[in-house]
Length: 546
Image (cartoon, rainbow, N blue to C red; front, side):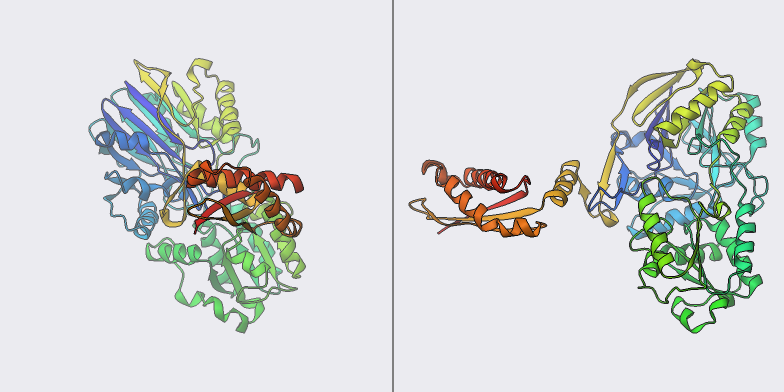
């Protein structure tokens, strides 16, 4: 039997990790992370729960990477820190992975692959990478041949008739595999709700040409630093217009340097200037490429919007947000646009200038084209939130597939294939692991809940002093608060007085146990607070015996 086991990415955007298991061997496709929402204080990254892989480490024969985005390789160091297996990827993808691994001091066996050149992983998997068009260089999907049948995993892809690097999605190879017979297609679902064709990156290039031609001041373009196809034509336009380029943001500097070293960006050193020199240059001769198009508080564009950057934006400057707001970021992006406009800059963003961004993911018509080309015996939509997966499954049915052929899986499901038939056969441990910066510690769900509650209610430290021998109340409770409103701070003495009266009712016998005293102190402080306010702050009780 062969099993498909998603550990992440089916029900969310991010955490992409999917296991294919066959006759005692396992292959992992991608090991991605996800970034936290605003309601997750102290959490820097989220990774999949790799318990199933750790418990079956001897069976895992390798990891294959589709491309270099964090949501596909960002969790790799946390897996390889515990399970040592080879990692296969294209040249640029491995360069991105190597940087992430070096940050955390993880050594790995990285093996470079080329599209259309099959390689073996273990004895059960013959893998062939197939070129796809996405927003990052060297992106691929995979054709995976096993004793049970052939699988195609598209990775993140779109069908661009005229990509910037000239490398189109290899539909011909997928079609050839389809003619041979594909047991299951696993396909990118991100844009399954979009009914229009995904636009070509050439649309963005033409829009930049038009906007830049009329710009009289500085031009600032905010985009994902990994979107190096877009960076490529921005650098070409800057060179034609006689503008110097400054890079802002650590990831932007790192990715551009990496792409130049690897030969993906062929531009002279003389094109670039240091960010600190921008104020001394003629404004009409500057192009700044920066991070922060999603409104991230610490990113480069937010610094410029707040007036804290290395130069001041003003009338005549053009700011371009060359991305789509990720769901959940809309409010932050809107506030960022407002700030930039108050500074007098002209702001171009997708709602007013649609051509400043096109997606890197296939829309519904393109997804349907792949389904009809490959003609798989089974279909599992991957990479997307629940509604994206449901819509992609509906497209498969509209393309002529029978309901029994369409398998709607979610994280942790086991989809088994035997004698050419697929069905759900069980589940494995799955979920999300919350980590702080650089993986220094795990944030449990209980800790996260407590942090959220603390942000909503504030904290009160309560100190009580007991006489060691007689157990009489000598002093307190002494209360001090953090995160309280002014009104709540004012009533602390009254709360303390009420809490003292309530504590006096505790029997002498019970006062000898510190744990019981702390529990009672917490209870009486909360009860006293309820007399004056509806809030129930977190109480940190402390007992001093003299």
